[in-house]
Image 1 (spheres, rainbow, N blue to C red):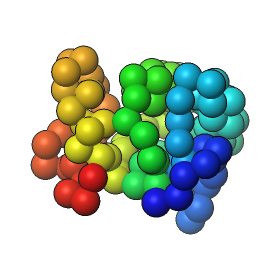
Image 2: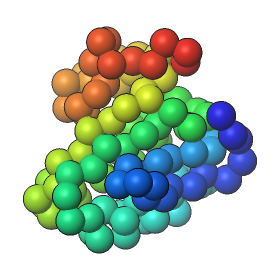
Image 3: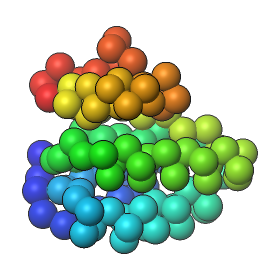
Image 4: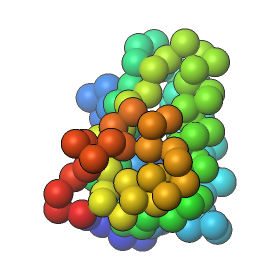
Length: 110
């Protein structure tokens, strides 16, 4: 995993999120992701394996992306979810709302 400024990009049809997300960087990252989601012509997988942090701001961003994707008729699913982020989602009762956040999908290396 890489740290530093967070980045979201489309690689081989996958929305890849990398870096460290915090309250100072989440809005810019959310806007980058929204631009990419608006351009999507098919359902997207969001790869969180390169995400360094597990923060409530990340969950908020993912929910915003999911809402926008739903409005655009694009389904989002998530992979590479860290155990910490999955736990935070479960504590917030959001794990059922984010496809790929269930216990069976959690990335064991996190």
